[in-house]
Image (cartoon, rainbow, N blue to C red; front, top):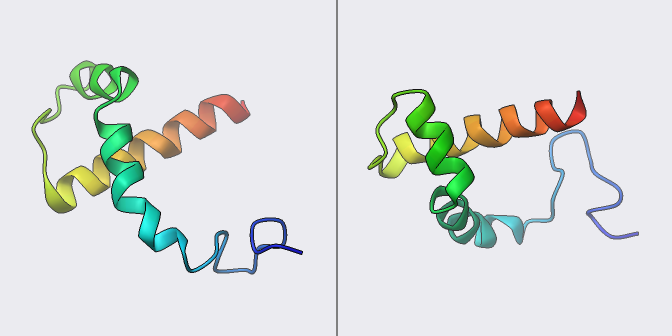
Length: 69
């Protein structure tokens, strides 16, 4: 079984996932959905570093919660 199909309590992706996060974060932050989400909340559209990390994670969390609803 692959690491994706059998997650442990603390790891939902394989260790290789750390290599993909920076690129994924960049793609998400440049998407129209993320940009609209930031503007609707009056947040800093030019966020960088840890602030961008927090925004992308919040966006993903809210989006997934909405989809799960």
